[in-house]
Image 1: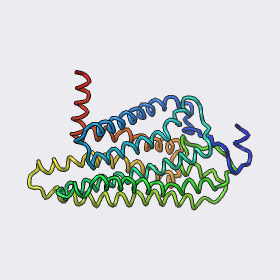
Image 2: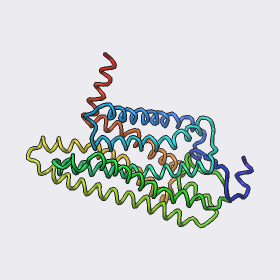
Image 3: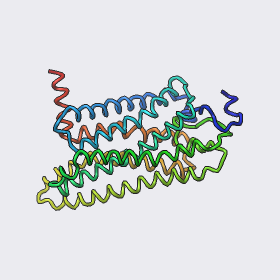
Image 4: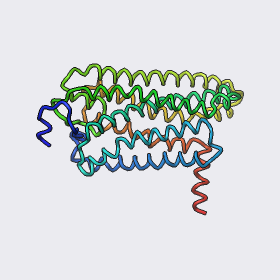
Length: 315
């Protein structure tokens, strides 16, 4: 393996994932909270999917989008965390070149998809609060399906060039990736070529997706807040705003760490590499773990259905 790390090659058959550089001696301890969070994310999102599927009263646009979010979260964390844990537990560092590019595609694609789903959920809340009489006709099941398809296609089309460009670069320096996964810039930085096009494309797409989606989310919530503050009583305002609480919490959990990670990885040259890698894994894992908890606790109909589920099992 040491020979493959130093010999010239342009198309490596495998890459070597280091894990978290500089923290190798504590990998086993780091794996404990990450494994715990991963299990919570898997169970939480599957419970959300099960509750929505088995409860007919939840068969509506808001909960369909929530199911899309749960599926996206499951794929996002599952395409990275099991490999990370295998590095930590079994020192299984090798990853096939094609598998690495596929993992890169899934990471980029499902990050963009999750952002798009949050935008779709904001639109759903806008129609439900600002134009409630047309909600059932505007967001019919075929429309929800088309929105889901559009979000998926957008994520795929934006993510695919990253992997295609990465597959074209010659890798003649090393095949060691100082990361736990095939993050886009961590891979292309190994190329012995001018990678400005990859760097600029990745940065532009990440910032553009976040900027566009946050803009439309902010526009939706500006109209929502205007509608809420026009309600006659404080109780009505609080009750209406409460329907948006879980969505707003999930938006903050997703966008704030994600934006910080994107900017620090490209501009935070004085930030230690172990922090970069550790925080990137937190960004991948924490939103999938917290989203089902946030929606389960703050959404009354899901909370009531969950309580009935466990109460029924106990009796």
